[in-house]
Image 1 (cartoon, one colour):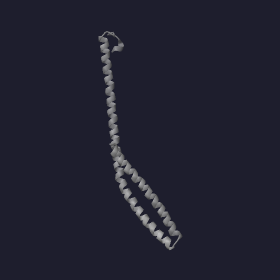
Image 2 (tube, helix red, strand yellow):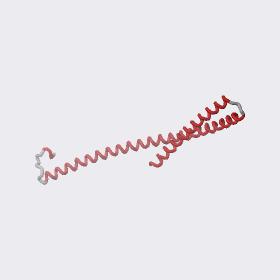
Image 3 (cartoon, helix red, strand yellow):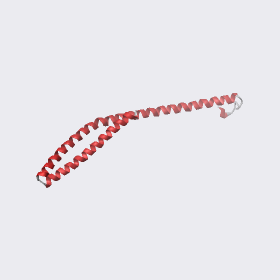
Image 4 (cartoon, rainbow, N blue to C red):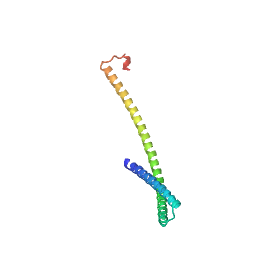
Length: 131
């Protein structure tokens, strides 16, 4: 179970990282494009502006794709998390039942030992601790 769960978490975390990187790159490209647009109108600046616009469009598309990928991954990760929490609660209940059964068995065994000690004459029948 660990491998599929870690795979979902890994994919989600990678997608989040890629998304953050693309958003940062888009911010940088947008700022550079604004600067070029404000400061110059030379042919080189116009070519750079065109390149930056193309890069910005690519980054926007990448971001949209990553956001589309992230949504189902996040839903799956949340579903897996709920499932794991449910399993953990079930295991806690099983442990509690097991501990209760073990305590009962200790009591039963203790009573058997007391009866045996009494039957073998090691304890008197009227011993208040023997009951």
